[in-house]
Amino acid sequence: MNNILSEEVLNVTDFTTSRQLTLWKREDLQHPQRDDVAEEVPVALVYNGISHVVMMASPKDLTHFAMGFSLSEGIIDSPREIYGMDVVPSCSGLEVQIELSSRRFMGLKERRRALAGRTGCGVCGVEQLNDIGKPVQPLPFSQTFNLGNLDRALIHLNDFQPTGKLTGCTHAAAWVMPFGDLAGGHEDVGRHVALDKLLGRRAVEGERWRQGAALVSSRASYEMVQKSAMCGVEILFAVSAATTLAVEVAERCNLTLVGFCKPGRATVYTHPQRLIAE
Image 1 (cartoon, one colour):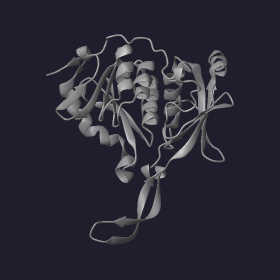
Image 2 (cartoon, helix red, strand yellow):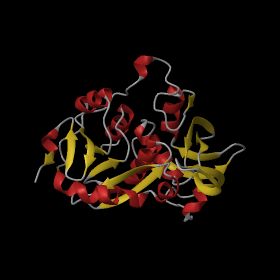
Image 3 (cartoon, one colour):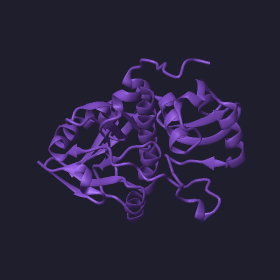
Image 4 (cartoon, rainbow, N blue to C red):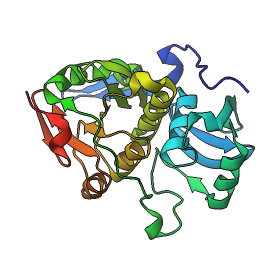
């Protein structure tokens, strides 16, 4: 299999399709014209030859997605437990073929469930309501962040949404360094998938991305909080609001959850002791 760090260098238009559309304005009905529409394809994650989950996703950065999903769902604890990945076409979409360690594959087979995701749904395939919400070890309090540095990150978040700039149809997730610089980011039609891509990238980057926080362009649902906590992220910033369950999960696992992030303002839901206001 290919090394898990390998990524294709592709043009942003590889992830859009040109469509014939009709633009309507109040003044009149415009003539038909062509415009870009974001690609959304079924992506199957196949572990040691067995399909585990199918998600709807943007067809890029899929090895990072597979790594992040594997970590945030508790399939693996370390990137070293994945020996290799290949992204291959299938009859109706794409497959990420993942070579998993024997020990982890045995554990996966014991808990395997049939998942069918729609744009990154975090509950699809859960068999019992009690299964919603995985046990997460409480996070340490080893990170701090100066809220005064958040403005710079918010201004540049769109830099990691090239497809979104063309189509208006993607979410972004980026890693914010302590001084507000964005170390990197990913986009996807699904907000959970965008976050998984970021979490996978962070795991591969290692120590370079240990300090800092995650920033998402969407609302903060409980799945976003849980995925972040499973991957050791202590601070999660969201451009939009948080849900009640997200706040409960964040409180329980010691994650600092911040919503309504705009230049010069933010709403801190949980564990403000990690934040410095200057």
